[in-house]
Amino acid sequence: MTIKLPQLEETLIPNSVNPIDVVNYINNYIDNCFCENMSVDISFMNTIDACYVSTLCSTKHFTKYPSGKIQWKIASKQVCEFNKDFELGNCSYIL
Image 1 (cartoon, rainbow, N blue to C red):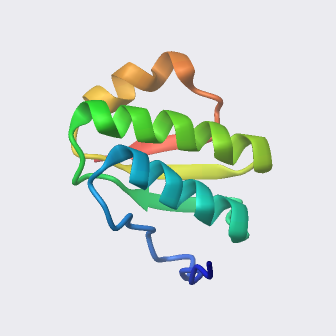
Image 2 (cartoon, helix red, strand yellow):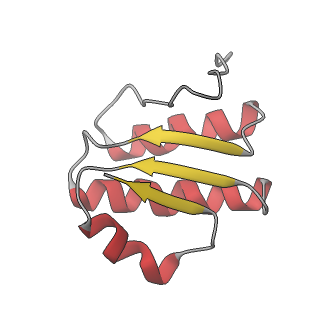
């Protein structure tokens, strides 16, 4: 599968609301593209799904790019609060 690499100012926006599909989409992107620093918009997801996706994908991103950063666009500050104990230091959240 070929994934188009977005420009630095662009944000990756998954094409599904199913959290498993979103995790697979983002992890596939991480596997196939150079994305040491990336931005992902999951603001369309509910809080629980956004926590699930950001935790799993931030971990995947950290294993490939330990010094990289991933920025999550989210709809609720609750995602930050939930994920704060799972942080690897590679992600940030914007509302």
